[in-house]
Image (cartoon, rainbow, N blue to C red; front, top):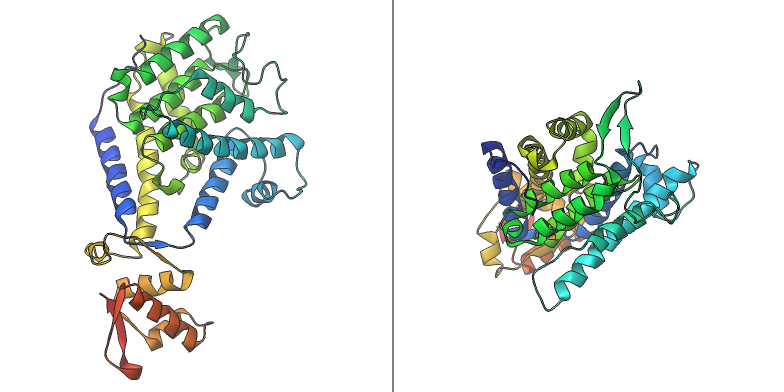
Length: 359
């Protein structure tokens, strides 16, 4: 059975440690924005936009948002279709995870059909039907602008065997012992290296890596986008993939350590960004206990008030009016009263000199 070669280096340990710490903060945060859904929608938009832009899609972020909203944009047909397709992939992954978790056998098993379905969605109306969701039957090479071959995929006849061997590893006891971040990173690289399809391998591989992360406890409310990190660090992204592939023609002899260091850093950075946003709302670790272990959803106005309270130790009406300058004093008082009723803050003092601080 195939088993990837890598070393759990200090960098990988540090990155996974940061990711774990960020996940714990996010999961335990006593205060979360009530507009979390809009955060998730934004993460989906960034995943779709940057996930397709990596492959050369020319739509801007705002154009991608318009396409996802069902609006017409003046752009190339293929670019528009790629965005529509990748949005459907995100929906498919969410539904597939729910389906897998609902089965009697609580262990999640991955199937080659999952991979083929993702590719079928990625390439819908882009590839011929007989090539969409089907392993390639021809040799694939990637050339530079000068025409030089920079990547040569394994022979087509080997692709089905290599994919099957990888899935056996992924579902095996030995494979399941690995941390989900490592499993996702390995899947990303191996699928790109095998290049099982004629085209669309990059988007399919990134989507399958997300499937593993989300299914194995790293959905983190689906607020992050690895694709955005990859796009912003495109030189490193392709550089680590290429350096790993250049080591040997034999997939099992390639050392994936440097790639996994990069992949785990991507997740650590993305989750760290979300953690910082959540931490600005509530820095007092005892607050959740005082809230009975619950998470309290805050309105947009309450988020701004809580960020000020955390930064300055409290807020009075004069400060609240400056923070919410377009809001009436009565509305501000209602927002503060709601925070009191939720047992998030308490009022100190009376009348105009009153101050609101954490409970």
